[in-house]
Length: 106
Image 1 (cartoon, one colour):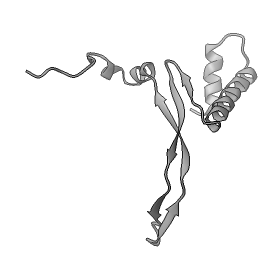
Image 2 (cartoon, rainbow, N blue to C red):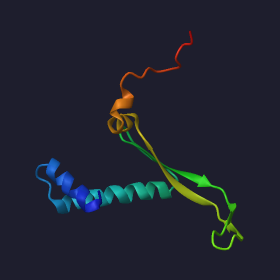
Image 3 (cartoon, helix red, strand yellow):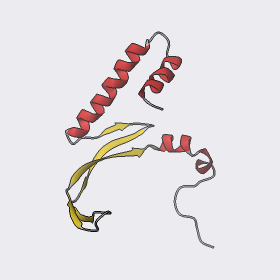
Image 4 (cartoon, rainbow, N blue to C red):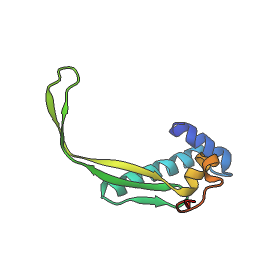
């Protein structure tokens, strides 16, 4: 699903909002999440998940064509961790019959 398809799906689920209005809302949401992550913060949406940043250290890699070593610089990465409700919806079979904690040995 791309952004236009997302806006179409949202238009079907909402009454009274135009695709133009929904496009503005989706754009503002994306922009707000990006701005917060750029500032070093994170965005937690209960029931959905958390967007956060992480750090990748500099390391030495290899050019696959030549085999020569090359330096890969440190970078800030973006992570998304799905929330419990989201995971249960994507994997409905795994959420049934599971107990919390470790199983007891007999």
